[in-house]
Picture 1 (cartoon, rainbow, N blue to C red):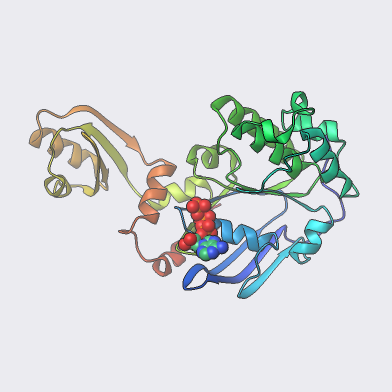
Picture 2 (picture 1 turned 180 degrees about the vertical axis):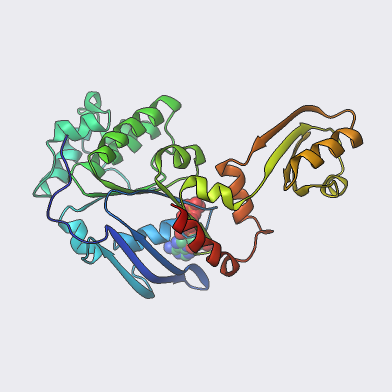
Length: 320
Ligand SMILES: Nc1ncnc2c1ncn2[C@@H]1O[C@H](COP(=O)(O)OP(=O)(O)OP(=O)(O)O)[C@@H](O)[C@H]1O
């Protein structure tokens, strides 16, 4: 297994005061983020939070209106040209006339210290697809080819925008096993995802964006602890949301068909009153807050405005 080069220095990523608008849309509204070498960071947030725009600026694909980006102390274009960075983006058409092997070969030729093509193909789990024209790939296979293109420069930093979209369960597992080998060798990884289990399982640190800002930043455990309490789920056909919200100990009510989810600051009191009020409640479960609960709570319209969360962001970071 190749290890990161010894030539890079400084913070793997340093984003300072980044701002970016598209017309009247303020996509990114003041992002500060440092990522140390060797960290594996998940970037989370609802659609339109500004994750891809932040990644585009980090890779030099979009120019910030304000603020500064450095990658291993140099500006993004230089970092990419030097092969310090490998990226896997959401879009990115694969050259349709090339085979997978030819395409990876072409990418390898662009970089001085690239991996042998066969090794990149093996890391991406697509050694058997080397002769396949890229136009004949399934969505999940195309994602793995993009991963091979990201790793072939033998980069110190991998930036992955929703890397496992379109992969089946087995491919996702194989992908993360390959990633684990890369991170165990000391590489830095920033990945955006909507699969919160991936963030929970594979990231050292979770950065949560909403409305173009970072609203929480810390370990998954620290993010969860920002949303205190437990959840009660129950099957309760036709339950009245307002009445549920009025039960003692309940802070928030969510309904999914006949299922209700009660977020509670005092789950004992909430459970007692729920069972007393709704004697027909079924499938009742009490559980600790998971990362999904925390992300939903922190990014929902009912959450505090992002400015008000910035203090807790600091607190959370210091916990990690
Ligand atoms: N090229 C563009 N032109 C106009 N608006 C854009 C452009 N790129 C992004 N936006 C807008 O900027 C905002 C942030 O988008 P961005 O793609 O960065 O969010 P995201 O967090 O990556 O979302 P998703 O999870 O859906 O990929 C959105 O409102 C989006 O519509």
